Length: 162
Image 1 (cartoon, helix red, strand yellow):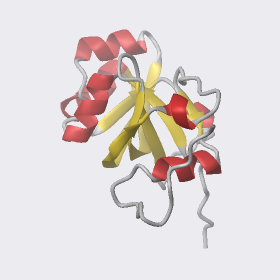
Image 2 (cartoon, helix red, strand yellow):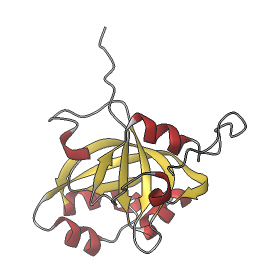
Image 3 (spheres, one colour):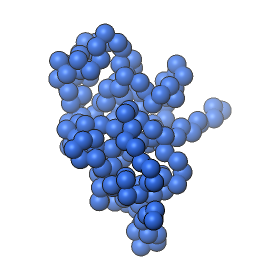
Image 4 (cartoon, helix red, strand yellow):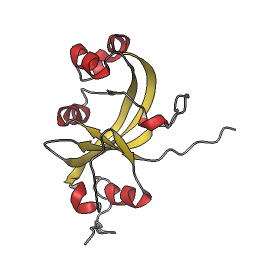
């Protein structure tokens, strides 16, 4: 029997136009230069990683959650041929993003918009927006889950730092 690995939840920084495409369902594959800073160590992950979506400038808020499962790593042209119709990005934009490097295609699943978006600066002391991604502590995950629509808000209050 193979043991299931537990991968930490992450906060991923994404441009607002791509966040909107994720929630509308038109973007079902995310392209990344780095797959969660080497969490997968050369092997493809079977279980998806929970990802909190930070919509970058001008929104600057954590707006929802989804999960990502790496599919493959290749050059932009090859990935666009395979996933362009569900990638939510033009061939030119993907080529510019990737440059001459290989990029990862990751399947997006279970995208959920928060009932109320989260201003990370008012929730997490010393918050700095991630350039790419950052791991979430257990305390951060608990606080972020309170913004999900399926969370019972009557049982706990949102934690705020004073």
